[in-house]
Length: 422
Image 1 (cartoon, rainbow, N blue to C red):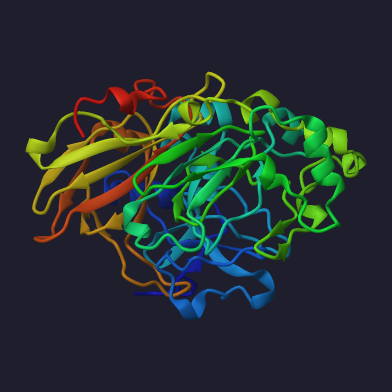
Image 2 (cartoon, helix red, strand yellow; image 1 turned 120 degrees about the horizontal axis):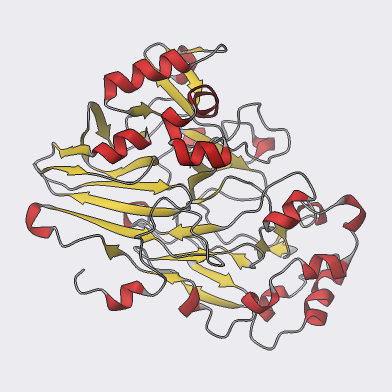
């Protein structure tokens, strides 16, 4: 396969190139892998990135533990490269960011409603893959993030079986705080930041993670993700605050707690504690209100495919994103209509999507171009995308995520308990 560095970067207006590419592919844009390192985490090595390339950004930048999908959101990393976190569209011998394509072609790419309301693609997704757990942390809400010129960040999790052949060191996630926990107890944890383990996990509860399930996580909610490789549809923001100071013996600096806090509040423990949605964190029915299992869109098993909702539900009454998992049996062709634009990643098998090849790679070199990621425009989605599994031996499985308010018919939380067929 070619390297992304072999492609010329387009710096001018991309509208004509975008329109030509969409005409040739039936409304689709091919995307190159977008790798993101984190300096304070250890890669879980399930992203299919070649082991020799885990530190391709340099050892000082940390290992690559994330792959972002259809992203127009910059990664909030120190010493980041100018395009870090941004997905590239590849067309012939050229490339340009999806961010630039959306900026130049607008509604043609994301659809009229999203373009009119947001003027951008307001969501993204990623594979998040670590050897062990990460710190108990939260993401600010819209009001809080606006104080530092950012946007809030609700998110969601789905644990694809194809990327979880091993659970790694700690396949459990701490969520929220134990019912009855007081703000003073949490404040004391923060006051103990430089005195050893601040003990915040003593105030929380861990849930065992299961491949093929997921969670819906609103802003201002503490969570310490475990070591399953996670598909994460989320809002287009990279704000966070780390409330845990020591993870598996690794120190978490205070700077990561207050990264997205106004400077005059960096030592204000009351402000930092009050960032949390307290009632949501101490909810005694936490699992009932956040846990997800797949819900089939319809009973199409006899037709050789099943499309399932894997991320659904509302956060404070609003649908920020949704996601589906489509499984197609060998030799089957089907047409799948959707309400809006989406980012797609192929996690198993090979086949076609309209006029584009889909192929799930076994191993990827850093910078290598692949045939496993696509952005589908709203017009193409509404017209119905033709998927075909060209394999004779294994299913074709793809994940796709959607923007806000695109799928009003999506299930509500708890719908899997009423599901009549698997």
